[in-house]
Length: 305
Image 1: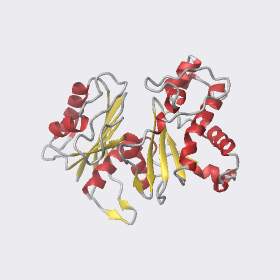
Image 2 (image 1 turned 120 degrees about the vertical axis):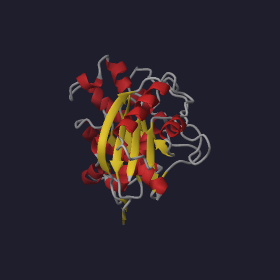
Image 3 (image 1 turned 30 degrees about the vertical axis):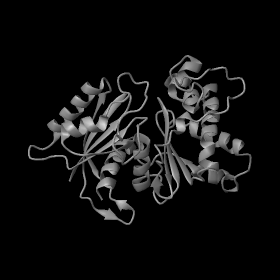
């Protein structure tokens, strides 16, 4: 069975062809095999969809067709999962994309129904099936990069409610002495506005990848992320936070976050009161850079089983 998987980001789209025999074990579907991958810059909606669909048609075997299609999209996504209109982009700073029916456009071009969710929800699903969340019923996948988002699994299921979680837009207390106004065009100094890649660049006047590990930017970054993680501890009682994304994957940042989170918890949460407990509470993704594309495939498999 051939699965088309798309990780749709504000900077680039990653398209993949994967093979699955749809086999299921005690943990759910077995991870599909990645056959082909390609990435394309995110330009206008029409151009991007056209290029991605042309790639699928070119890479499919002459006698083959997509049997399933999974779409892990940047957000926000408008509406409620399972209802008409789900998969349409909500208000986004990406020019030309607000209101665009990405799932519908792909379905029309490729002739197959798309299973669609946010990129972080898809990655969370994949990490639970095959990665760092395997065996857990309550965990969060967080990505920190151009934006900040979280896919939340509670009681073994992705959290949606009236929409999907927007953890990057929760307010966070301003750290002492920080005068940076925040870069979120909607909320200014929410978590994303204070701790995303553009926020780091705007505050320090340099691209994050050019800042050395001992730069004061990272201690401040860790404090803001720790504040943003407090609801995962106190409200969701999560078993683990899986931290990914361009900034989230920096090896020197995670120990700083663990230290800051321990300080902000102030010994109120006994289960995280030891260094060993905190070490396992925040972890790297088990699927690495493939979490997004495997997440899109996981959506397709989950909707078809």
